[in-house]
Image (cartoon, rainbow, N blue to C red):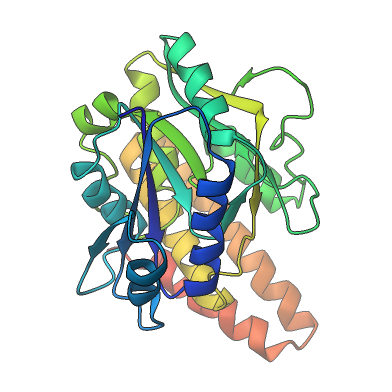
Length: 288
């Protein structure tokens, strides 16, 4: 088996169907399998898969165990030499799986690669970035946009990390490193895993020829909860990857980010946003 495509599902029935359909329509000249790990969806996702995609391997969880842990579970059932971790809110625009497979097999020191992501209007979307660091947080504090997140060239480029929406990784490395850290429920798990992969001496590449649409946020409508999870996972990431002094500095910057947003919305008398950022502040300063 060349590639095991692992898709995590949680109440994304329509998006999931569209994703799987694109995989079978676009993927050619490669031996692959599709594994869907369902995190206890209540929207009929499991029945849809069994009825419309009987050749898809379905793993049904009795509770939502999060993105990373669900991928770890899928990897245990995978037969492929490579794993493609594909979000349920993605649609393949070309033979992306084969393109990524060809690149990673020809480059022995590449452990992770991913393609270019596009939004629903076919405009460039966040596809990769530098690993999170103090400089990245300072830019976020100062509202400086991340301009280096999409490969506008026609050549593969070495990068910090690939977004978890379309991350291809060597199965042997993923398994040797025990996959995603269980302390992450969602967000930043791919950054932390990539950090460990790079410490092993491997490279991470963006491959622009592989094109995938990412319908980001359509699978997660609760923005307040989403932001809370992002900041909580951000704190966990720095705890896992950096020393005490570094964490003190970066945590101070992130607190300034949260407080500045809270102050801005207070000046605008936006009660909904004020409550949102108060909740995020409470989550972030929690010692757990």
